[in-house]
Image (cartoon, rainbow, N blue to C red; front, side, top):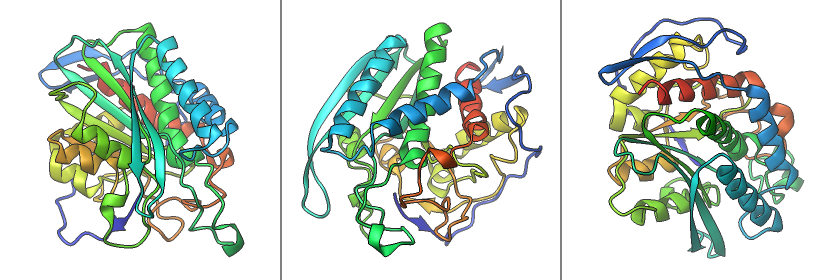
Length: 328
């Protein structure tokens, strides 16, 4: 990713209730309304398990397409989804990046309740940026990024969600999409199509012909300490009602200090290409802005390692996603 743009047109900010940061130890049972149904929420997201999934990915090394670490981690993700009861579909792609590099890429999809008509799409990118072009040390800017937060955190949350769905099948169909080649993009302005190559491929050729879930949720940079998730511009443009619902669920679970009620920037991320394909998709992405880029301080640097990951942030995001799933 990505590029964070200042909003030219300001949307109305919906102000909701706010609460203090939740360490994840409170009981996560509540009654919320999704659609026209109500259901008691019982799933309890395990932040330590999700953190272990971040570590497991980083143990392979930077997952840059074409590397051995990338191949091994892809195999690991497939094995974990199968272990957690998903029907797995893979898309193997040959892609050309903006700088002319030919890469072998791989989208990985895990399906739950594949025959259900009502479906929810959950996605995160699993690749790493090939170079740390935002590193404060110019000598390190050609090194690959470990991507503990920018990539592995979203994947880790979805692996933990998958583990829960293996134990308690949701009432709807859920598809987990690990997209590849998201982060091999041009950092210059005006080349948005250079990002999200794996998602662009999937949007043009989905894993199931005519695939049309109700909504999509993209998780990106969802593990750093002090993260805040504002209402991203394209998310509210394409799916404001669903943004409202997800943020409400987060607030009711006690995570109002993470899911803040303010309008965020417009971010070129995987959800943009999903929305263009006609699937309303929102982006839960850290816009804390600590590093002067609009994102977390270690974004696109060699410091994006497991040391910056906070299990409490993983809990806030993962519990919110689980509550949404099991409320249908």
